[in-house]
Length: 452
Image (cartoon, rainbow, N blue to C red):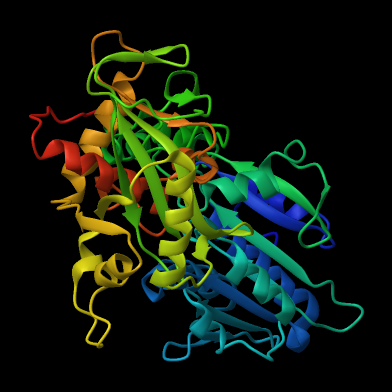
């Protein structure tokens, strides 16, 4: 291993005791993927034909990048002695070591690994996973002889759909490089950060320019990528316009008779189902707060969601959801009427008709949100969030009682391929319901796109 030239992060990564699991997190360009490849190489050198390494990415396209890294590294170390099966994505090294490059996106993909054993699990770009459940499941595949320390090494950049759970689980537990016990795995971990400016093997000036050009409207994301700062309020998409001090209001006790109100609904069964009561101000003070004319308040929330996974629903039917909506509206003394996702009005092909018709049979009446394109809706929503707190401009306010909203929206990421859009792989159901409700207003309002 001495013949390999490493940067300081990679050297420090290799110096960590093998008994520690590792989260390699930081800015982009720090050399994390190469570090993972070197860890795999060392593991195989140490344990020979008993070493079984699994490297995971969410997509097969992502595997190609790591495949190139391993081809360069193993070719330099072994020449033609290392053999790669491109069909099965498997490396077999001269010492008998086995390294598999695998893809894991859904629970269906897990079937490929069920019952198999690995001694080292490497998970790259973990921030692409909005929730950790699939990755946690893979730990059951770690098995080895008593003298082989089984190990998990996770790598991620800040700012992806999984930013929130990763930061909470691995970053804000202890200082960099200091061991800590992670409660979910009950294992001792270390947080190993890196940044591009510590990687002498890239053109750092050119790389910084590439990062700057990739997010010209998102200074929060740029800072996270450059410095590896996981403390960035990485809602990313809403970070520049959502502020708890401006947008959050104390829970209401009643809705004034002079205010307009309606429901906004995003249907889900396996996915969360979210409904909001939205109220629009005529230009009035209510319970100690003045709301300019046209302002909208998310008064209450019904979220059918698993508390241990904010992207999973409770498998409620439309009938069950309708009963819960009716109960919520009864508490507020309002009629259960509003707007819902246009998809609710599609005929399902069964005698029961559309989801909206099922709601109507239970006394809950929705019309199509006519949500138009997503970008237009998000721009309108961001502008209203940014205008909250202004004395003469309508803004968007959210009750602190809307816990699913506050538990998800501040952490939603941009779509890295379409930076004007929201990454829909995260728990965006509260955001969608709110957007649908605001589109009811936009039918009659002229708006200016909100850009940052």
